[in-house]
Length: 352
Image (tube, rainbow, N blue to C red; front, side, top):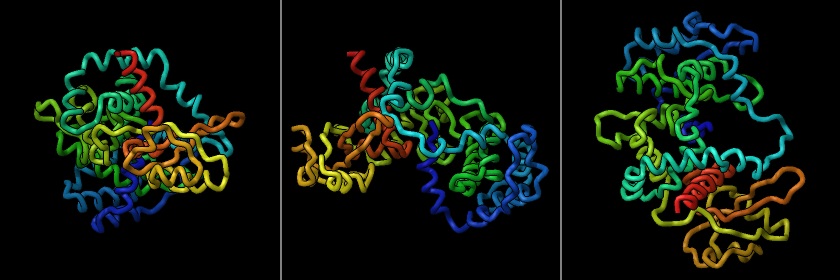
């Protein structure tokens, strides 16, 4: 799963010192049959970007040029970043089935058993229960089995300098992530050309974008460095830290069962804020939503979450809490958050 949406918001409020980096002259997007090994060192605009990036972040200009000169355009990255074709129906049941399935459950059980002490420590320190951490790692990378095979610098460069037409242009965001990647590599004394990840540039078991790695990854096992690829302790601590930073509330539920209002206008009114908790249980009731008993006594705000089930089935609904919203800060999708919760809870039930 891609985890870059949260970092996109941070990029939108980047410091003035980085403003010049967003003004790289746009080049014509390469054709799908362009050579996969096109080297960005041949682009004058990329080398100007390298100089501006080095000045803005206090990096050695020659080193930055050397790294970006070896980045390669990847046509497959440009294809994978595109949204589904218009009119593609969302289907929660099908989406859930991709993740809550026997192989992932078995892998999750093994991961939980091997890392129970770290999961317990993360819960004690950050208030995030094991099922939430397990669910994210399981959905993101199948517990480390699918961490991505693109060179991160290639993925980010492709999307920074040749972002494909047909969707909102996010090239400025990916240019900022390139800067975060090089800052991370220099600080950790890592060769940036060696780092592998997803088509969007996310890395490691938790699929952190470089900016999220720099802000939220932690050395949870205390060995002096952060490793989100091989240290399950660092992975668990970093995911829990991320959720805590985005508002996870200790010992609170993620959602409640709810029967959505029958009246279209009432249902539409509750759906306007989307995944943002905005209504009290009493306001849900005023609009005709029927909450389970525990939700009626809940002292926080709720969001009516709609999960479509394709063209021929009624939508599913839940009432999301702040903890549901915190999971969507990892990936801005209610479907993603529910898959994380359902996978984590399913593994938890099997363990019981």
